[in-house]
Image 1 (cartoon, one colour):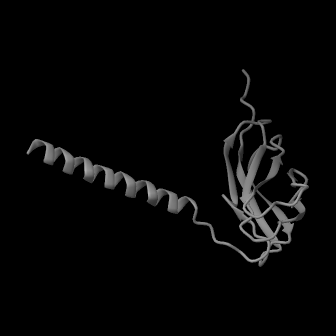
Image 2 (cartoon, rainbow, N blue to C red):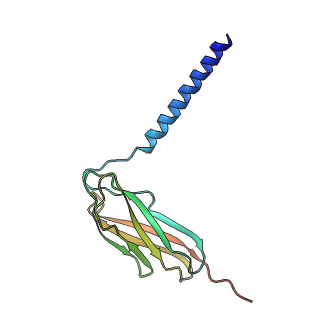
Length: 143
């Protein structure tokens, strides 16, 4: 009798664990496919939060080409001279990840909200607006 109960408990635990794992895999691989080149960002806004004066202003926008053709980024433009983006030079293959780097000049004290305009051959969105925001604190007062 004990063996039957033990066997039943193990069977239920095994089935539960198997279903939980397959559900996670299904969610992770769910990406909308696009005919042509596609560009799907992990996030379209980067919040620097509150950072120190002259802190490292480098951040990255990570994206995936969710299309069927190579993605070519032709231009990235910051909304002002304090926001400098970097562009991948090579085409991004279908299913591959890419990175657009951005560097904000943290020598400017105060709150900021800036944009980066990305121009590409992505179907349905030849231009994409990305946003960075945050607050740069002044240097502490020395006494």
